[in-house]
Image (tube, rainbow, N blue to C red):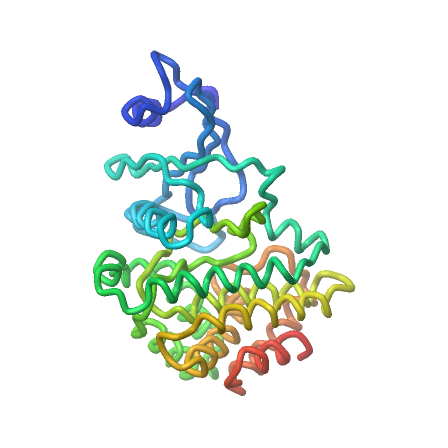
Length: 330
């Protein structure tokens, strides 16, 4: 970064992340659509600095509140206590400037799970660890009124997840709209645990001590089934496109689901499974016709996924396993 914004440098100096008059070396990081992200090197050390954008970098217009940066910081603070090591260490936060700094994790030691999956390096044990981590977080935060008040981010979640994924998809498929809108209402009205909101392989690092979650801008005290379905959806789609890996990806999916459900104690397991199955079907359709379509599907793959997902939405399978069968083989 050749010209550093004064506010960014001031953030470093105010937080003691640099010394003297240095400005630091700011290296923009690619991959995010909702924030500016940099690796910053100073004499004090290397950090990752993140700033939320008012409008997401996607084809469709998609605006989002800047205060989500503060909720992501709050999520990391909570999870650093609940599940140490499963988020980057939070270092400094400036709510006025809309910035925070967290530990820099070297890619060589913390490969991105999405990269591993698309390269065909499928490790079912990693998927199980992800499922167990999500389950532990939900179990540890379930029915906590203090967290419910701290993460009462219903408006953010509507803007970032329910509207672009569920309501936009309902509008694109009028014949399925009553069912999809009913699922959206159930999701919006369910408040049981601290939800990450973007549990995707692109936001999960495969760390030496286990998975590390990134990008909790959608943090919300709401329906834990959303995190489960959102993550499974990415694996289901990859099972349709990563050549020769359908069986190993299905094993990974089954292990993730089982590891997650083993932690469900705040409500009947079947209730979570059923809501997640409903969400999975709609989320799969949303990755074709919502505001955030999957970038690595070709035209034929999009058409095939659309058909399978429409069938799953209409059938209303009552378990994630049954929904996965429909989406992968349909």
